Length: 399
Image 1 (tube, rainbow, N blue to C red):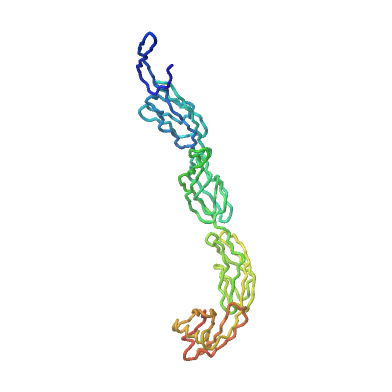
Image 2: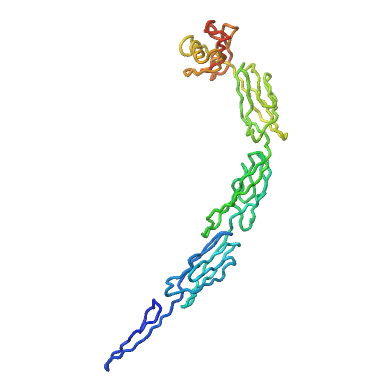
């Protein structure tokens, strides 16, 4: 009994000798071994995205010397998938997907020794989105926007997220949401993206569309005044302050109005500056109204808190004295009005004002103390020869 598996094709002559009581005899036997059936496998369970190139390359068998392939065919494949097979050249199956779905195809290899088949499955999911050109939207700063961004093929290539939209605006599935933050007419470069199949069983590959210009016409927003604000001043000092606006660039104001202002104050209708000289300590709640060029307005209350002055007599000599204040001013500025100088040890505010043409009245104020009244102190600290009103008129120094 002969047994075994041939490993090579061809013709082989073997000689068999039989021996018995009567002697021996030999005979020749020829073995003719043909080619084996092609050996190959196709473990394809591929998943790709719509509009993408799908291919398998190197479609060859194992041990083709003994299991040659002379032709190959495919059945069950989608129309866009093509087999390109040449015995001595290209051996691929490829195509650009133009539909979504799932297909099981069979690839059959044939040779002198017979045929062998293998099956694979291909799934095509959503593809790369493409933004429709020429889109534009209108909105208003601070107001929720409406509208939907379009793509050329939302059925097969929907967008799941968007980049490059106007400030304050977002979108996931194309529906706009959010409130614009930047007024004006302008364009942005929008990009749509989606998570698609990249060769795995679940979407794992993010693709992006080419950037497309999207137009935006965003109107200015209703002007707003910041809430919970207090404007502070000091009795007897010129007051020149304004309420704080929220985003004045995109919520511009053309008209300011105020109700319940203190008797000493007025408001500039163009700039909103509240000016005047407070005559007494007080806290006043003022209602300020701002209006834009679209005749849209809003109101907000603002507190004006005026503090009184507190006089703390300084020493006559040494650090913190009027002589030290005088010397610091004279060494830093000559023949001009001194507004501020630095005295690092006491951190107090000194107020000096000319009296007539030869004398000065000096007061020191600690801003951490509740204001009371201003009383001139040490008004003889500066001599006429050293402090002439026309020469050294020191109005304010911060020490």
